[in-house]
Length: 71
Image 1 (cartoon, rainbow, N blue to C red):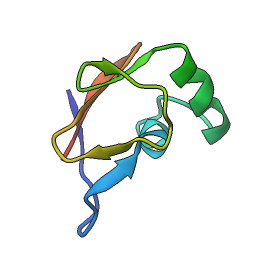
Image 2 (image 1 turned 120 degrees about the horizontal axis):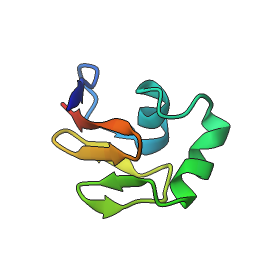
Image 3 (image 1 turned 90 degrees about the horizontal axis):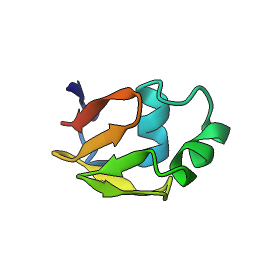
């Protein structure tokens, strides 16, 4: 499982930003395409909102990519 550290002072990151950060999608325009397929889960639940706030301790699972824990 990969760990992504938030910057000091940050408590959350938007799901779309996280997907780009871990190279799960090459561009921001493709984030929505990945989300509508049901390929992304946050803490085990399917998620389709690119603006979803992901917090420290959350685990994001992306089909075909190593799971990501936000720290």
